[in-house]
Amino acid sequence: MVTIDAIGCQKSIAGQIVDQGADYVLAVKENQPHVLADIKDSFRMLAADSDVEEIDCGRGRVERRDCSVLGNLSLLDEPRRWASLQGLVRIEADRYHKATGKGEREIRYYITGLKPDAARLNSAIRQHWGIENKLRRVLDVDIGEDLRRKRAGNAAQNYSNLTRIALNLLR
Image 1: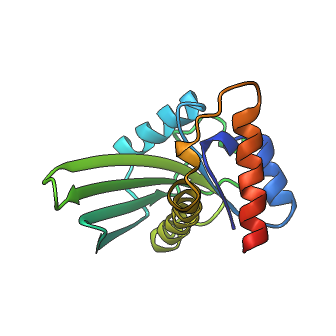
Image 2: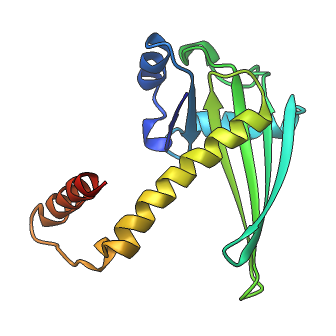
């Protein structure tokens, strides 16, 4: 299973993943405005085929995640153009920060080549962000990448590449 952020939400990428024998979960954001609008309409008008709620406590916050999945693609414009598309996913996350008493809400959308199984898809999306956050933490906190103020030419990108090479060598 391949999970990709919104930048990889492209028909050609979905096709390549399926051609190589894998399934996909692709984040959908404003870079696919028509698809995003169709997904939002689908969740407004249709009942979810699968739904799971998860509550997690840790790092000074409480988070409730609700994952809903639709297998009905009838409101999506030309769903056949997406290789093996089988479902639409919505993650609603409510976070409460204990220290500040503030709450926040986030809704994210995905398309998938997997059958509607909210528990499995929620887990896959959660693992994707776990990997992303672990890498970011190492780069930002341990290596201090965000503190570097390299702006001339390609310095920032070159430094970032060297940092990742060094990190891989250390691992």
